[in-house]
Amino acid sequence: MHPHRFYTLTASCPDRSGIIARVAGFIAEHRGWILESSYHADAAVEPVETRAEAGRYTMRIEIRADSLPFHLAEFRERFRPIAEELGMVWKISDSAVKKRVVLLVSKQEHCLYDLLARWQSKELDIEIPCVISNHDTFRGFVEWHGIPFHHVPVSADNKAAAFAEITRLFEEVRGDTMVLARYMQILPPELCAAYPGQIINIHHSFLPSFVGARPYHQAYQRGVKLIGATCHYVTGDLDQGPIIEQDVIRIDHSDSVDDMVRYGKDIEKAVLARGLRYHLEDRVLIHGNKTIVFR
Ligand SMILES: Nc1nc2c(c(=O)[nH]1)N[C@@H](CN(C=O)c1ccc(C(=O)N[C@@H](CCC(=O)O)C(=O)O)cc1)CN2
Image (cartoon, rainbow, N blue to C red; front, side, top):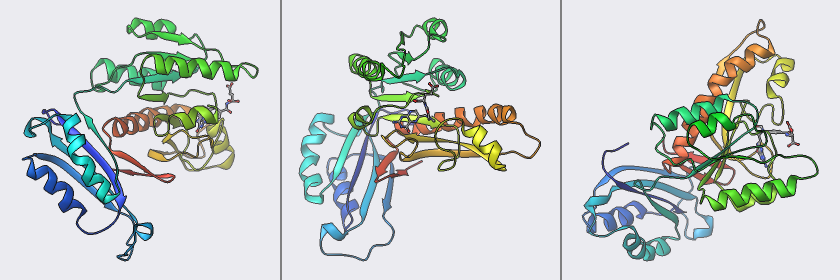
């Protein structure tokens, strides 16, 4: 992370020659100072004449804010014609504006505790406007951190009302990102559709293996030699959303399910923290059901 305040431009467009020249030329024309830039072209697609046939070209550029003669709003106005010319889907964010991250948790403490510790130490430079849980277990711990805690019980006959309340709370606190920190309720499709690319889950398996509930029990029954964790965006298809980050750890025949759960917690915490940071730094671009992560 740079000491300077910077803007992050992320964009994707139909691939063609001259994209970088056009974008970097615009920045240079205004004496902008590029701190970091990353680019990715879809698998080699023959040069084509029409946009419809082209692969996607993806970029991420960090620009030192004080090197430009205008602020973000004017950057957007001046850049828009270039983006339209290139058929870009794009956004630009300001490193000085902290993301507002709402945490959701059920009964497992480890990911919640880990994220709160990283927040409290300022390793994660974010706002946590509230924590929401379907259990009251962690109220004291969360409120000790000076963070509002909302207990929203979920049962088979109140799901619609419960998730309407979660949506209301997320809007009320102007949330940017929702993190399911071992939150063990399946979000309704309409909630997932309302916030594409804004809800992150940590699944306690190396997806696509062992989707759904109790993946360590599934892994034990299968006799795997590696277990893992997957940080992914949440969609209406359970544990099928675009993968952001993964990791694995070796196990063997002598390990019980409890051993797997214990080893797995360390992996889950690390994978969620890395995946969340990539997301917060606008390093993750979703492309279909996959991601490009400019690490
Ligand atoms: N719409 C989505 N919701 C959630 C996703 C997702 O990908 N899409 N990921 C899960 C997390 N998860 C595993 O990581 C998971 C959580 C819960 C269940 C489940 O079967 N839950 C039961 C209730 C269990 C209980 O009450 O303890 C249920 O919701 O009926 C499976 C997988 C988070 N949500």
